[in-house]
Image (tube, rainbow, N blue to C red; front, side, top):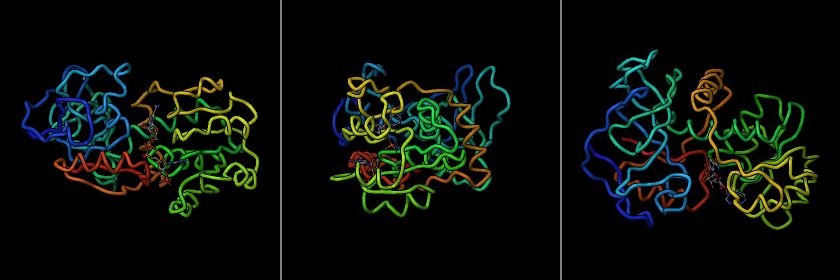
Length: 297
Ligand SMILES: NC(=O)c1ccc[n+]([C@@H]2O[C@H](COP(=O)([O-])OP(=O)(O)OC[C@H]3O[C@@H](n4cnc5c(N)ncnc54)[C@H](OP(=O)(O)O)[C@@H]3O)[C@@H](O)[C@H]2O)c1
């Protein structure tokens, strides 16, 4: 089968489309014929060798966590899913024609594989950070970096729960944030005052890692009301870095419910072929994705 792989850590150019042995579903796993794979920033952080402590990597290595596809092997002990089912979920080395998943759910009606591949990791992350920051219905959540994959999920989950949102994004994404139910303003010079002008902030999420932790503490009044997923320096300010994934099956079940009720839709900004994985990584690393980027097999 064809698979994207890298044999050394480095820039996007280390990604190669190679011929590889097909993987097989072990106990508790399924294998899918991948139709689309989500591109996450962690994919290029792993490729660069940035997250070796958290994820020891043996080279050569495949790439990719998220996938949507058609089940073609069901491992020992797995119930409730059959060969031929359309599923989305999380596994490893998903930038490939076949991949093994450890967590999955049946795709909701009406969703394309391309769209479905964009949901698993970002919905898990969004649910986790909303839970960890402790924001309640009727309160207002400030989201720094609200237009990317995780931000798009956070805004819509918050709206579904009756949590108000103020989001920051680039000038090109202001209408996008408003379309997801948030009050919006731009980041950069003067942003703290612009946020104050939009209203009171009860809790805040840093999704961009753009060095704003101190300001988020000021705006919420307490480091306990701030959570980051992207700023490793946050603990210096007493702010939690959230990095340990919660239950992916539970997140997928919530995603299916929200999507089926028309409450969650994450747009795909651009699709690429497996052969263009390096371009997808370069575009993701540029840091201005609206919604998601995916590879289509
Ligand atoms: N710790 C965890 O568990 C975990 C989980 C998932 C992701 N992450 C990390 O969280 C970050 C976000 O992930 P993602 O998938 O949402 O990324 P993404 O889809 O690439 O989105 C990045 C967003 O950052 C915004 N941005 C860029 N510069 C900014 C600035 N100076 N201020 C505010 N926003 C800015 C961009 O908005 P504009 O285009 O509008 O400029 C873009 O929409 C990544 O660093 C990723 O590695 C961590």
